[in-house]
Image (cartoon, rainbow, N blue to C red):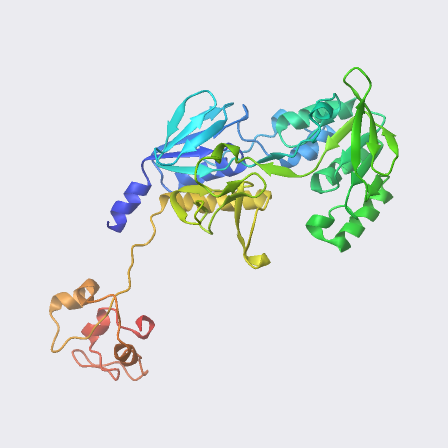
Length: 404
């Protein structure tokens, strides 16, 4: 297949992006910018169009911006089919179809998995449904938590001192709300940033009035008899009277819909992929038409001895989306190793004008490699060999020291 034919094939067909958040949107935009002219479908479990998540734990919680004003800007016209408010529940890679929760099926030639992650829930389901208990991940989560904070609760409990837990504590102090942060670790942010930064974060939180309790856990969330949170019991035997509790215990990747797909996917680790964002199957073989980007992706990280890691970060989602989209529509180079060889006697005019006429074999001999080195002498006269033994016509066919 020639390069132009391959490029045309890659820029047509059907591409489905499962996951309509930051990575999904930026991937769709990159596809159009790269010249994809085929059918483009975005599938999203949430009913909202793509929105920005960082403001949810900052401007939305403080009341500076409403949750419905966090939509991501569109960088180009997509001309895409949007299927929002319906989750993908399975994928048949052999038949190239995505199965949706409403029973419909969406066909594809190439697919991108950008389903992201969800907040890890409180393990006790009955306690997790109490009024006043919540998580922070989606736009609806932020709107609900903002309502809880707006009524000035007597005390807020944050379960977990990672990034989300620490941000919520900061917001509560900005709103002059009493807040307690409970974490089983030695210091906040220690798992992500190490002990030194953790100690700095602990000092900073306490200086700003946070009741920080490390080395303990929450064992029970107690209701008031009417389904409303009233008290939290800790592992050290103490209790706290609280009206709001935010569970900030990390996240789970949204991979359940890939359970029978044959891909290397797990809710704790995500979907494994190579540097080109192509997904691995269960045998560790790279797929040709399945790509991954965003929080759900797990790839070899160069800063950690190429250990497979998932990076839940805004800029990483954008970078992976652009890489994946590029590789979905830009055909890989079709170049193969070639042997640029000299000729006995004067070469024909065709061999001089066409480098492909010099191709003979995918292999090169070591003697030919040695003779290809340019000694740096003065340029040869027309029709005569230079000091390397190559005539100008032979060098026109591409034989240089860099090809040796």
